[in-house]
Length: 531
Image (cartoon, rainbow, N blue to C red; front, side):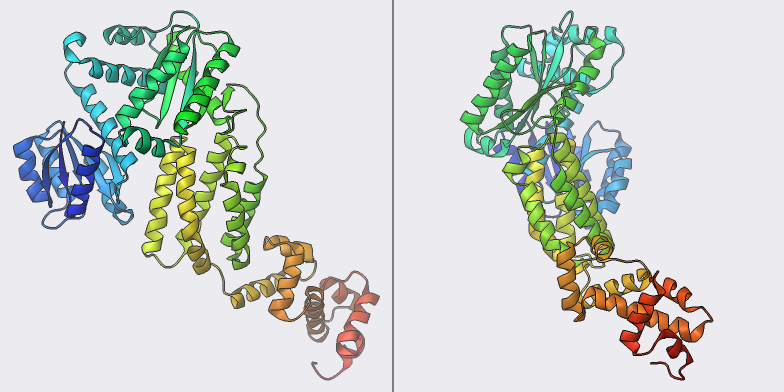
């Protein structure tokens, strides 16, 4: 398939072409254009299958170029190149029939994934011919995998349609009861480089038969799930769960030992009819979420109940709330320490994939809130948004290990963001005083330390450092000053003033008041001065 690259930056051209050549992909870069006008001339001459285009370019931009292409109604696919700041361009690009987008700088795995999906889409749209002449052996395998991915990922209720399409594409589906197993491969990047020279196709071509060879005792179909990254699906007719676990254990240990790959697997229940493929895959995917990265619980069946400890993440949630609501700089170091812990292998290995994905997802949501209210938008802002976008993409695919790698990158940048977002020491002191002034009637040390999400003892020490007074002395001072105002400016009785400032016992209130002003409340009211 021919690709036309359109970008005013030569390094982008070189990067994309280099990655295509490195991975031995069946694509040819037929042209390199540096603005929309030049690209349109090449487009008319070459009729490329795929266009990868930037949005912001001199002479004529990407949107203008795309509108010209659409006017010719040529059957090609357009992929948009986008930086974080280009999103205002990217949205209208999809109205002009862009099929996908790539973030700059172009990531190798993202490029390969987008190109493969786009190529598959083009193949589907080609006019139907006899299957035998239409596909080479390799091409037939790809079309079969695309078909199997389709019937498991999408809810197709017409069983006859599934049977007819399977016959056309020479796929032998099970008769009678069957189950699905979803197998997720993590830590693939280093394995790709070390064992396959970065060639993703070779990696997939190795894994598929590797899995199939361990299920030869059953009528088994093994295919790569096109709608997920590094995920394979097994359709089998085995009813012996011990036999299944034995096979999966062999896969787990072999791939761990030989390639340092992490394997997790989830199995559906049993289904009878082919229109249940979608539901079987949903169950396998749900089971996959309950697996852990350790050996003992890498495989789960739908309906299994596994306890997962997310207490540390709940603490992180509270600390993030503290920073968002109170802009408290005193919480962020504790936050970073806890984040490093929950991203460590020791912790991750004992959390389910579903919980890990959920926890990372809401953490990212809260980072976005902080960025939204941070006044300054700069390169740091843009870098973090790029990382967040990549984390989100990997979470969608349940590629948890890759998401964690990007979170590690985020933690390097996060202190600068939090320091810029948080209050200064003086601002924080004013916030504490403001809170006491609004809640002096019934506030306690426990209440105020909880409000600012700080340990009670730590808050007590911090308060004295900021104000040179203990919390109890400062609170007493505030209450008595409020009482003095009420005594001079209202006709309230002494016991009413006492209760208004937080003292139920009016005799105790009188003792406290006298200690501060050296006068009883009645004497103070009758005196001629405001002390």
